[in-house]
Length: 330
Ligand code: NDP
Figure 1 (cartoon, rainbow, N blue to C red):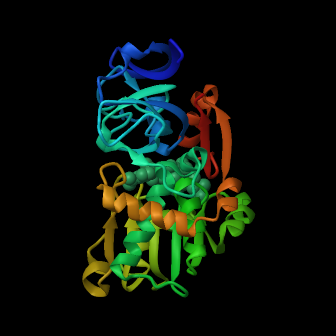
Figure 2: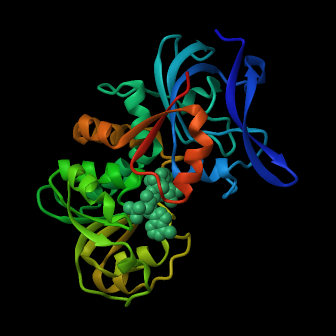
C-alpha cells in the first residue's frame, strides 16, 4: 500500500474555499470503519461548484472533494464488509461534511457503502455516478407516480446534454418512452439522437417567463435546470402528469404558480440522491442494470486522469461538459 498518496483537498483561505492537490498519509484519513482503495471517481455539477469555489459545498475544512467513488475494501472493522469487496459510494454528504472520492484511499462509514451492482465494472459505476443514479431515481419516481407508461408517453428532459440529462435520455428511450431533449447546444443533437432522443427544443424557449397554464405537451419531465425552465415545464405538463425536479443548473428559484397543480393535478416530485435510503438506491441501480445500454454509456463518457480535475470542474460549471466524466484515481 502506498505510504503517501494524492488527494484533492479544499481548504479555507481567508473565508474562501480553495481546492488543490495535496499528499496525504493513511493517518490523515477520518477514523471510519472501512478503508477503501479508490479506483475511480467522477465529476458532477456539485463537484464543479466545490472545486472551483463557485458554490459553498464543503461545510467543514479541510475537506477531500468528490461526491462519488468506486473501489475495493482494504481493511474493515465492520462485519458487513471484508477486504476484497468491490464497493460504490454515492452522496451521503461526501465532499460536504464527509471526506470524499478524490483520494487514492478513503475511510468510510459502513452504512454509506453499496456493493458494486452486478453487471457493472468499477469504472462503469463511476461513468454512471451520482448524475446517472439520480437520472434513474427520477425515472423511477415518474413511473411509481403513474405519470408515464412504458411504450408510449412523451417525456421531456431538460439540461439534456449534461450528465443527468444524458443518462435520463438513454434510460427513457430504452424503456420505450418518446423523449424530447431540451438543450442550449444544437451541436449535441446527433449525440442526443444516438442516446435515444427523437425531438429537440431550444432551451431558450423554456427560460423566458411564460403563462401559468400553457399548451399541454409532456406526460412527464426530468428537469436539471430549475427556475423559469421548471415553471414552464410544469405549465406544459399534461393533466395528471408529473415533473421530477433534480437540479438547479439554471437557478435555484421557482417562479411558478399553483395552477398546473390545482387545475391539472400535475405533481412536482423532488429527487434527493444524497440521503436516499438504501432500498430506493437499490431499485435505481436495478433500473440502471436493466435499462442502461453499456455501449451508449461508453459513448457518453470521457476518461480522464485526476490531474485534469481543476480544468474540468471549471468546464462543468460553465455548462461545457457533455455527458459524463470518469477519473482514474489510481
Ligand atoms: P451538468 O453540468 O452535466 O448538466 C447540466 C446541464 O444543464 C448542462 O449540460 C446544460 O445542458 C444545462 N444548463 C447549464 N447551465 C444552464 C443554464 N444557465 N440554463 C439552462 N440550462 C443550463 O450537471 P449534472 O448533470 O451533473 O447535474 C445537473 C443538475 O442536477 C445540477 O444542478 C446538479 O446540481 C443537479 N443534481 C442533483 C442531484 C440530486 O440529488 N437532486 C444529483 C445530481 C445532480 P445543455 O447544454 O444541454 O443545455
